[in-house]
Length: 112
Image (cartoon, rainbow, N blue to C red; front, side, top):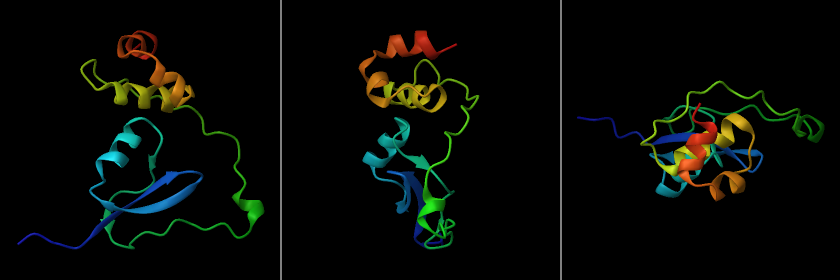
């Protein structure tokens, strides 16, 4: 018999970390593909992981942006949302700017 323990995952968006049920809703999965939401933990039993909390407001101020990653581009058959997310995560382009491009433009510009 399969384990029916509720699963949760932590996601980062809006400058904070939020706990969500696993599997994700279609909306959250789409937002992750576009780079609007970042997965901060692997799925696990409910309340199994607690991200570190800032001691005071000074610690909560954002630091310099994280270095750009060396991620391989999605396959040419991937969805446009996957290509938008790839462009946002790896180049720092805004979501709006990437979303305004066609899939062919995204592949040509960021497909390597």
